[in-house]
Amino acid sequence: MKTVVPISFQKFLVTFTASFLLLGSNAFADSAWPQVEAGANVAGFTEQGIADLDAAMEQIVADQDVAGMVWILAKDGEVATFDTAGLARVNDQAPMTKDTLFRIYSMTKPVTGVALMMLHEDGLWEFDDPVSKHIPEFENLKVMKSFDDDGNIELLELDRQPTMRELLNHSAGFGYGLRSGDPVNDAFREEGVLASDNLDQLVEKVAAIPLLSQPGEQYYYSVAVDLQGYIVQKLSGQKFGDFLQQEIFAPLAMSDTNFYVKEEDQHRFAEVHNWDEERNRLVQRPHRTDRPSYLDANRIESGGGGLVSSTHDYARFAQMLVNEGELDGARILSPESIRIMRTNSLRDELNLGGGPGRPGRAGVGFGVDFAVIYDPELANSPQGPGTYYWSGAAGTWFWVDPSNDMFWIGMIQAQGERRPDAADMRGIAADIIYDSLAN
Image 1 (cartoon, rainbow, N blue to C red):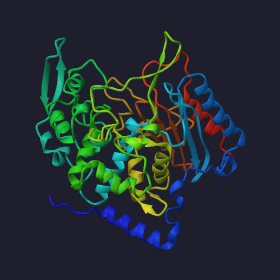
Image 2: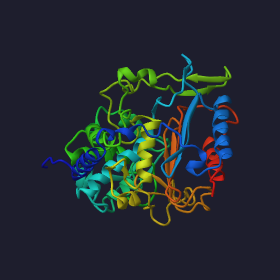
Image 3: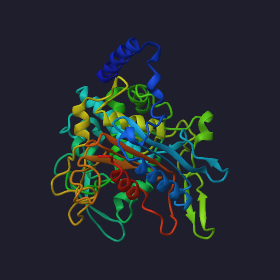
Image 4: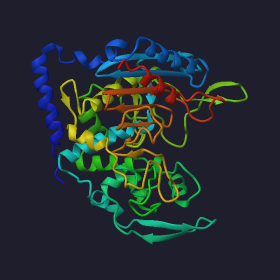
């Protein structure tokens, strides 16, 4: 395949050059956003409501539900609150700061989705393409029909090839290894799929493991977004990380976002904590030894969960989404592409986490690497219709409400056991935010 400069990057160069000529020496003046708070009233909230929100997040930290937290709320491009509490690392008592770096794990997925949609705009793939068009190694995939107590599997041929649309909404049938009790997910762990040396090796391992279901039949949270990263790499002719840096991070001034932590930034890197029942307090978890460290520049560029980022950087990414693809003069995606991403594309009988015998979460579907609340009443959510969201394995979470031009990000680092009776911080934050809207 001929390697070309993606049309999306050409668009960025044109936009950036025009902005620079227009703004002169002030071209980079907005890259510090969202460091300065506009305040509750300017952002469209009550002063008391935002005070209550800050106090609630501070209490969650004080109760040791988490060691520390950074949170930000913005509406109409104005920052209502951007604050911190607690510690980034309990061992050395390092305070949580606005520039603390976090493992964002699966909050990497929406970034990968944006990258893939940029290549869709360049005409390099279509939603109804079979995945095997872009990953030929998948042409001979099989499907697990049943298995016995010894792990022996009965296999079926594919009814049809899974499509790119199904890869994007987790209904293609792939496993992940995050759950147990079936040979497919067991194989993901035994083969160390997520600990692969690179994306080529990951694809090779996935190709040898059967699907959990026929394409389109069920929602299974899966390795699909790592596969998307591989497709970005293949179609662009660039390393996945280089594409993200050139096409997304540089245009959005996301200078803290990468697949590893540079040596000069390691003092800003938060550690992961869990509740220790015997000591009755939070303790710092040791780093994993079954895969390269986040301090290793050679670790796999995982589109499903590999990025490290700061609250500042992810806020710029979220505001680009709120703005339907643009921030500070840099056009990343068209408004139409953003609307496609935030539209539920699961079959009518499926919901988030659903399939035959599994009802899933009512009122919530899935678009392009986001969950989508298509019916807030069914979802028992205070959020506006069309709100889309995702989270990370260490507790980070975000959502964008397009009906209110609003986003929220909560950054924590917590895995494993939690304090007994720990607060539902996500629900508490959402309830207070929506009660605080001035209108």
